[in-house]
Each structure stands twice: as C-alpha cells, then as structure tokens.
Image 1 (cartoon, rainbow, N blue to C red):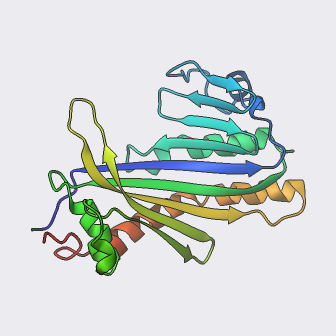
Image 2 (spheres, rainbow, N blue to C red):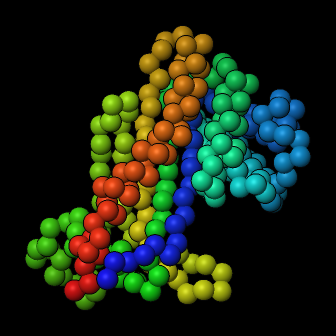
Length: 235
C-alpha cells in the first residue's frame, strides 16, 4: 500500500552574513521608520533584545533574528502563491537600508516536514531501508537503529546541502507524529570586492529564492518520494 502524505509543513529562511553587523541595529523602530516593514505589523510577544541577539516575531509569521555577523528572515510557507510571502522582500529592503555592511554571503534555507498518518515507522524505514544499504550495522542495540543523511549537491549556480532525518511532531491535543524532515541550504558566496557590488550581488542571490524553492520541491518529490511501492518498505 502506498502511503499518503497527511501532513506537509514547509518553511523558508534567508540568512545574510555580514562581517561587521551589530545585532542591535535591527530593532522594531528601525524596521518601521525606514519602511522595511509596514507600520501595522504587530509582534506576537515582547522582542528579545540583548547584546548577542535581537529577535522579532510578527503575527503574520515573519521571524527576524539578528546576531553578530548574521540576520535571518524566516517564515512558514502556508500558501502555493509564493508572491504572498513577506520574508524575501523584507530581507531585500533591510539590505538596502544597511548598504555599508560588509556582506559575505547568503543562504536560502528550506525545510519540508512530511508525515504519513499512522505509519509511525515509515520515516525510519525509509532512511535505513531505502537510502542506506542493509547490513550488519543495522543489527545492534535493543531498539531499531536511527539515522540521518547529509548530501551535498553541486548545482549550476550554487551548492546545495541536503539533510534528511526523522523527527517527532507534537501538535496541540494530538499524539506525537513521526515524520521525515528534508532540510536544504542553497549557499551563495559574494565575490565582488566593492561595497556596492557586494550589495547588488547579494540582492540578486536573494532573488533566486523562488527558483530555489521550486528546485527543492522538485528534488524531494521526484528524486526521493517518487517511488511508490519501494520507498517505504513495510517488512
């Protein structure tokens, strides 16, 4: 019997690296007064502010975390219309307002968590039975072996690091569900030596996010979850 996806959770993060970034520059007043975010955006909780980190979580799902050397803009993907996502344009606007940061690169990070109903053992069997070759290494200990896999792909425009592992999802008023989590990082380096060139190059890298999302989905659905009867062995 072919398992059917009963839960499909996706997240997008854009991580920008800047050598001389002070986290406290990225505060709520700066974001609103500079026009990076609309004035009507509201926080879900009090911001986290200290010398090492600033975190702002908004009611629309956008999460901004500034740390020494990096800013992360993340958001759950709740729609098939990628034009409705807020994190990518906010990331680009933030860079425009901080043009003198010594930018070094960016990661387009994506997560896809897939669950298969009451087939609790399917994620583990998929990793150790389909992606890994069977052998004596699996026959050790008092419980079935757990595993995760790290893969590195050299794509035409960047490097993709893909991690596959089993996770437990705890949902309100529901028993925990075992699921597969695919985590992908598209790594972009900035090669220009001028400040203006670095900024422009980084913005172009961020503009690749929708293509990276499409590539990520295609890899998962056509390279990993495409096999119907053999991907999730039941024996």
